[in-house]
Image 1 (tube, one colour):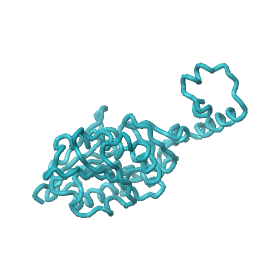
Image 2 (cartoon, rainbow, N blue to C red):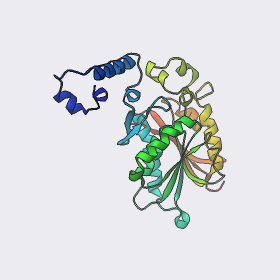
Image 3 (cartoon, rainbow, N blue to C red):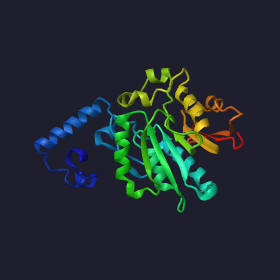
Length: 266
């Protein structure tokens, strides 16, 4: 109702006895019909809050979810442990498969005071990047670090040893999970959900392989996974390249983020 009226929740309550005009009633009915078909509320409203940021979203991008904030926390904890890199150079961070730009903007807006850095947000979808760039512009004044949105398949646009931290909320649903999606998820872009391979970790395998090349020695990789994928994800890190791969769980105790460090001596 608030969206149909262009009004706040408080105004809707305060004016609950006021009759709707014809155009308003039609707009409200159209939104109700879309929701009846189980289209996500975020798409109906055109925005979703993530990390206390109001982000524009539509069917070109995934709806940002609270559990992905754990990935942002891991990224910020990594940066906070070493806010100044050798030579006092700025941090170079990539958010792979950025979608709406939620993770990239959250990191840039919450980077530790006094630190310097750049976040490169990549996505292979041109449509998704249009949404991400609009959100970057919307929150430019809140970001301590600049965010650059770049079209690329995973890390293909990055030079070898050019990044200190790679983060990603990649597609990780298995074929069986894709076949039994909740109705709301069928409105979201399938390419941002289907992870490939029987276990859903096909895209993650490519991400780990590419990250080994583009990270500086000692750099970090962190990515979101589905509950129950932790053991399989840890098995992707070869000891000749990676150090200390670990699972970070969410507040409900489920596998949520995998983090590993590229061998400083490799």
